[in-house]
Amino acid sequence: MTSSDKKDEKKNSKDGTRVFKKMCLDGKISTYIGTREFVDHVGHIDPVAAVLLIHEMDWFAENKEYKVYAEITATFRYGRDDLDVLGINFKKDLYTDAMQVYPVKGVASCTTKIQEKLLKKLGSERAFPFTFDLPAGIPSSVTLQPVKNDTSSKPCGVEYCLKTYVAKDMHEPPDRKQVVDLLIKKITHAPDTQAPQPYIESAKNFMMSPNPLHVEARLDKERYIHGEPIYVHITMGNQSTRAVKKLRLSVKQVANICLFSNAIYKCTVASVEHDLNVQPSQTIAQTFSIRPLLEDNRDKRGLALDGQIKSEDTNLASSTIALPIANREALGIVVKYIVKIELFVSMGGELKLELPFTLSHPIPEHYEEDMEPPPQPTDANAENINVELDESGAYNNTLLSTQADDQLLIDFESNTLTSKETDA
Figure 1 (cartoon, rainbow, N blue to C red):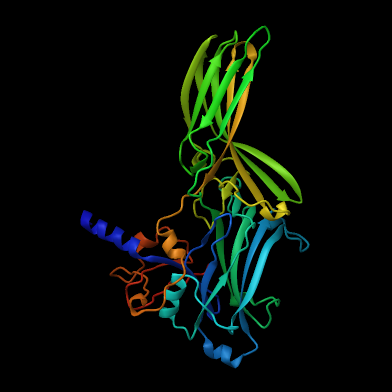
Figure 2: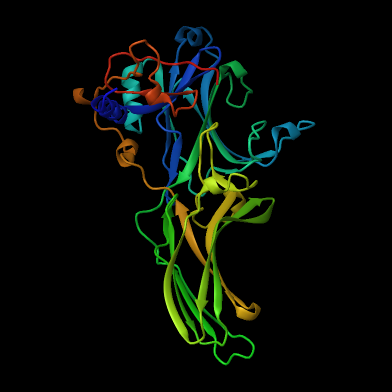
């Protein structure tokens, strides 16, 4: 493949719009959703917007007592599935909401551009949009890292599930063959505005020393993106009679499990040491860097990670940014980060300081455009949908290689809709 072909392929993959689809086992309904990540903006949360497609309209016409419902649930799983005994499940629902999607009550309206495009392609006679508006203060998707290579059970943590199902009543247990379960996750993006730089100063007196060791420390900013290095600026004025021999810099994750009782777990996710030789009456100003990464902590069980969908890779859990609420249990797992500075002096003394900071995600490209309401219908907006195929008719592995087995890439260019069914 030539370099120009690679550039064209890269361009085409960017032009495509990614849509996720899953069909129930008996083939009656499918659910389409434009994204499986929903962003918490602290004051509000992106709506969960999806489209229901009914494949067997004649069956519903003959069995009018059956309806299609949608339900979204946030669940805190605090035990392994194989430990469930005597009907006791080690999980708790932190948030749940449900609605009737078909037959439509009132007028079904689109709230995002992707919903509108799907409706135009699938046909408004058998495609029905629905939207959940999530309230502020619900938990973010957080997973507690299991033992390495343990895939026997779902990991503990907070997970979200969007379910559509066929039943006679909303509260009636549905037939598993008529259920579509889609795992989704709620994440937090770093706001555009920066908070004040974390800063701390401290002084410590030592025995037989008339003057203290004075230290000032600050970070270059308060909010960091996953993978970014953290720069720590330290100024030391050593007026004591002891020499500063070593500096240890570490990043600690503090996870507060807000279920039943508050349990706090601290884990070091990055650590570096530097040899120093700051003699009495000497002053120095120096900058040190440290980078917290999940790649360096794969073997630490119980580490809080951002929520995972199936076996996709993830990163360290983002900092919890939430409005004050009365019921902290509804937050599930609250995650914070601190930079810990330890200075070791001769004859056994030490000085410790801590600087809090926020670790989060950036706002992705084209995010604002994808999440805004659809424009007024015009002929120019009537795009078509198609899953791109290669010459042999197989799915383009370059475009689909990072997708889970119930996902597909849709390109709003062609005239046909081709779907890939899976067992997931």
